[in-house]
Structures are given as structure tokens and as C-alpha cells.
Image (tube, rainbow, N blue to C red; front, side, top):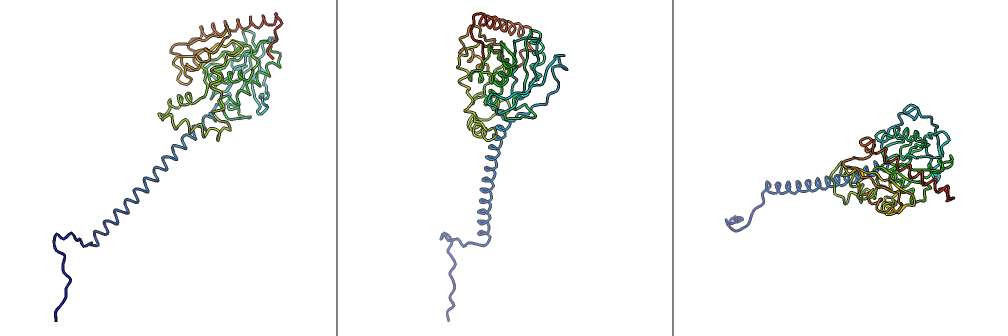
Length: 344
């Protein structure tokens, strides 16, 4: 009886008999590949989420700046008699709080418009020194908090949209106190807000604007780059998308181009430093180029930084601003004498 056996494969025939060890190795490789792919996917998703979360936080921080509480008052700081005042914004959607510092029976008033991330005190200007100077020149002074600085009537920061209505409310309040001559003196975003109020027909006789900041894609990115180096796109686009979700307003609503192109019917003194790393100097230059009023002026200060020009160039700052105020006062008196209607 013949015994049958399975022939063994010949060497070099190309046939490989899988072994349990080889199959197990291939299975392990496939399993490891799946784990690596899944890990890469998870890490990628986390990085995208972190990227989105960062920009959502930037948008939230822009609309909810941290502002310290008031630390003093005009009497304690400069021995100035004052009264606590409240008034409605022009659209009556918010309540504004401030200090009214009277100067005897004066009918001349200056409203101080503080910047972003500060309150009415804005110590680095320094605002109390300025209020004391103006009071000595026989101006009533109105100092107030924008909504983002209010502790009892808080509103988001909106780059001047809501704030311009609050400034118009301050202007209306000052006019109701009998102010015949009225000037707005703004700093940083408070200066940009003043220009936005001017677009809405603010009844003022002049403005002094120091370190004017106007939010748009370029200036927002300019400030971001001071803290983190990110590409302009999609960063600015993402902030623009998140901003209305956290503030209730859209960045596109801010009339940044219009305020730089408008020829206002009142004189403006623009002050800006070339070393300003928050508000590019071209903002004030653009506004100045559009002005046609003969009293309007532009003072560019070499190497000066944001909102610090009063401190670093005090004598010249006082000389230029008080000279401008005197010219405005002469103009207002001339209008009254010729019977021209006062700003109302």
C-alpha cells in the first residue's frame, strides 16, 4: 500500500507559508497604525478647538476689559468741589455715571472721554491733573464712565458703537446745565468714540483728540501682534465672527473708514506719538487730512507713546491745548455776537 504525502514547496518557488508569528506582527502593525491615525486626528481636533477657543477669548476680552474700580474723587485728588451725576445715553438704553465739576457760573464745559480699559480717572493721562488745569481756566468739567467701566450699569465694550450714544448723553447733560461752549477731550478709544459721536451730529464746538484709536481689522491685528504672533487671516476673521456673540454688536458696524474721511464742521486738535504701539499714527494723520476747518491742527510728537504725551511733554502739551481752546472760545464768542445759532 502506497502512502501519500503533501509535497513540500520548492525553494525559490515564491510561495511563503504564513506562520502564526508573522500574522501576529502584521496585526500589531495595523493596530498601531490605527492608534497613530486616531491620535493624530484627536490632536488635530484639539489644536483646532484651542485655536478657536483662543480667538473666542480674544473677542470676549475685547468686549469685557478688566477695569479697576474708582480709587479717588475730584475733592480728594485735587480739592475740587463736584457732584455725582447720572444721565441716560442718547438712545436711552443705558445709564451713565459721572462727576460734574462746576467752575463758578461758567457756561464753558469740557467733557473728558476716557479710553478703553480705563475709567473716568484714567491715571496714566493723568485725568485729575487735566481736570484741575481746566477748572483753573474756568471750564466746567464732566468726567464719566463708559458702560464697560461701570460697576452698576455695565455694558460691553463695542469699539464706540454703544459708547458714542453714551457720549452723546454726556453732551446732552452738559448742554442742559447751560453750557454755551462745549468741547470734548478724548483719549485713545475715547477719542475714536468722539469722532463716531461727531458722525451722529454731536452738538460740540470743538474736540481735542489724543492718541486716537479706531477699531478695524488692521488696528485690532496691530494690537494682537503686541502679544502673540499669529497670521492676520484667519485670526481677524474669527474675531469678527465671535465678537457679536459676546458683545451683541458686529465689528462691521464700527464706521472706522467714515470717521477718517469725514470733514467735521467743528475744529479738531489731533495729538499723536510716532512710537504709539497701540494706535498707529496714520489714524490721526488720516483724520487731519480730511479736515477743512481752519482751526483744526495736527501735532505729531516724535518717539512719544500711547496716551503719555501729557506726561512726557507737559509744557508744550499745555501750551498747544490751551492756545487751541482760546481760539475756539474766540470763535464761539464771534458766533454769538453775529447772531449765529449756538450748537444745540
